[in-house]
Picture 1 (cartoon, rainbow, N blue to C red):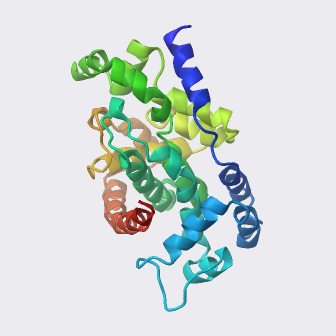
Picture 2: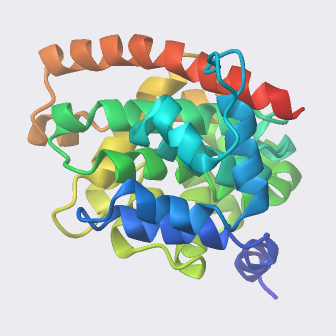
Length: 286
């Protein structure tokens, strides 16, 4: 079995992405689906329901009356924030893992992913992408390939980091040179395995090189921009975070100039406050 086959097999051994979250993601693509339909799907998953209710009763979102149902939570915090918490809760078991190969302690990948999700949603108007919920989800899941790659990256870390340190290649390219495949490609394959739609798979697979994505969707570029900007915050940088560069040519072709960059950095500062609130809510689980 080749190294690539081993990594792909390891990806297949990861726990399946929660079926209820897959269903929520599918529902989000239908503009006619309301909050009631989403609640009807989520209410049958006890674990996610318990997490959502517990977080809504936290000091961050708490009110005078305690929340005891998902519908109570919807009234308390609104459709948009409830959906974010549902999606975030569904990914915690996977994304909270320690990833030694990327020098990411437990929780760091999840924190970076949450921040990226919030920023991707916030930048939809700047990039002119019209599905904020999908942008949030793509930002949340963009680095999922690292879950399958971490052990292999750890075993070949000197070779990968040495190649990346030369300045002639990115960490992503070094992964491919040494291991035969990158975490972005493995993430795309995981997305296919978990039955994500083609646009979501493309955003995951091409989040470091959005110019390689086919089709007209701006989602891969939006996730790329959000990911790089979030790395400047120092949250969840890991071993590879500082090795990536933004695609300025693609930024220009997407109408992102100096003014838009300034606005994006302001948005990053704005969502960081929201990010700290979400992290504080999830700390209740520990």
